[in-house]
Length: 400
Image 1 (cartoon, one colour):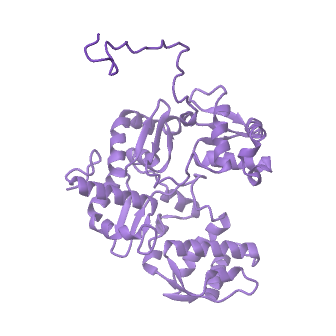
Image 2 (cartoon, helix red, strand yellow):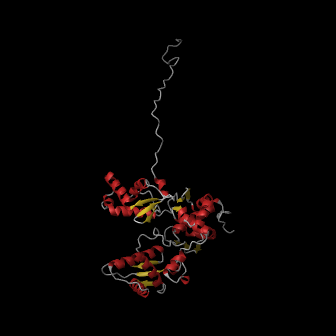
Image 3 (spheres, helix red, strand yellow):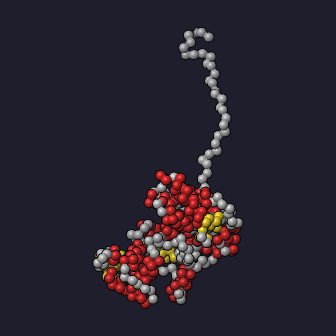
């Protein structure tokens, strides 16, 4: 039976439906699932429910899912120009080396020496017109790219390590290429793209209206109506309650609907890549800064404009008022602290750059402090005295 977007798990028992939802959640976090990788022990379950999962992802999100006994690959839409997505360990040059390494690996067979792979990568860069400088920074970027591919399971260190690249005397290593996974990495079709920009655009294609909106809800903590095209905003306004049921049943996500949009949370925090509130100095100052930042006049869409000077002022006051509460290393440079807080709020989609400042999302109001309880009125409770007993255990028998 083909999955229905109104209830993709219809016809399954409660146990099977819960297992499919669990597998779907794992695939959203690890689009390339393999034995030995994170949550790889669930690959047999994914294989068992592959038909239900493939139909559900296609019906709800327009995603293609390939499942084999050795791996599962969910082809999610690419982030496009979203600056909040990406691997934190990779710089732009590191990302370039990931692509160059993938291109170089296609023709080297099953195993290759690290020195040969590095030479092939640099030759590929030269063919693409990318300047390469053999210095420590460049080798670190290449090493980060190779480590990223190792983490994905595309290559593995059979003898030696890629870390030898950043030594004074680069050490040799034997690299094994897992060609079955290498062929599954690209989300966009190279045959359809004439340029790198077009390849990114193809990979980020939103598809139908319902798919585009659900992808936003599943992949982002906050979706504001003001950020959506008119047709997508209208679709979400009409189906907010129904979509809340679908997201909870199929992915275990909880939605909070407000006039400005929808916030989505994962109670298990499994799909949460940036935890907030957090325990770090930057996260705690960001949390305490929100009430001050939101104490400004908002725009018609609910966003509150905050200048860089205002954010700096609020952070400086918090650091000065509670000096013993923060890690000294995090607060010794105010400009770095402010930049870190702005970056955190941006990655949480609670702030978007706006000129020399930011626009704070109305979703930030959910973290404003609230009193635990209503204080009791200042009233005096009369003392209650127990009534005098009519007799006592110490009374003599017969006396009254």
